[in-house]
Length: 426
Image (cartoon, rainbow, N blue to C red; front, side, top):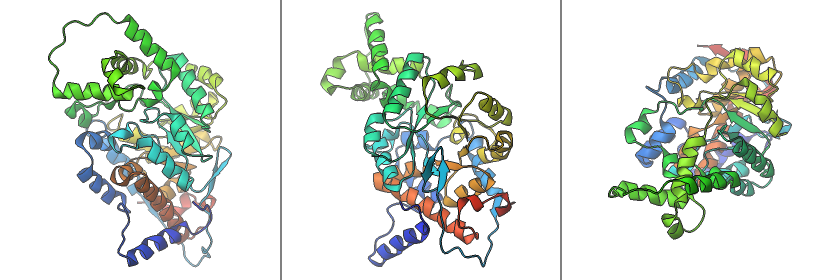
């Protein structure tokens, strides 16, 4: 994607020219319609996992309500014929203040999963944050991206050896930063998944970063070797058979051999036992910092005191996030938390915003308040579910195009001209 001015105009031109020939966009160009189309298209399990939030989903609503409280105040009679939507982040110039946030188990949504997202990200120049719970190994997605920017999400496993191995692989895959996700040391109470009895990882979905890791594979083999002989098993149900087949597909090797092997089931059991560590504290960050030279960003920071402690620990950036409202019901909305975090940081490290971002106008509001960039989540996943790689690419281009037009229509020609003065509290 061209980082220069006019991305919005060019995107409009593409759509309207195609319309002359009777062709419409592959997916809806606004999030509400995207979500409605996804509800009609995705399976109950996929929709529950992607769209669902914690508890009564008050935090999902709070993330959106936080945006709705801000209004943009356009200025006129300014020369906005040439615009620059690019920003600098961690030493790299990006075409827009946008990244594709990490979303796990994308195979629930589309068979090409993370690979389709990686190709779309590379085509647009927008960085992709590889999910720790990906359906495709990071080496495969990295190979599809060429020299396009990519980051890696890290869930802090109970195995230090596994954490170190993941970091080494991220470095070798060309990842430019590590996003340490701190708000999922335990899974939140997610009724949509609970009501369906559905945890994708228990079925072998979303664990490709693990099954492709040499340390994890060794741990699985050790677990399988130490397991006592299994007694007489109950008669399998069709659901149990499907689950076993899914686990067998998730483990490297032939399906026929895996169906007879104890390793696929042991892989799921090993993952569930070690995937996250609730005991980590601020003192553990020094160990993590020593394991990699890549920039470390902490994701899930909502309190200004936590932001200050993060700076004391030497991190390189923060991501203000509610995990899309999926972890703590009745949490403060991410955008509501942003100003206090920014005040605590005092511009010493970049602060990004995740959760509730749906449009280019949302990106403008967040950057005007001081976020260096935003992470997009559900919107591109819906694009993936509806039209695969092309759907993801269109969603990204639509968001960036709208951002460009909103930038110009509010009287600005560059992102660094935005400030809280651009906005009014509604």
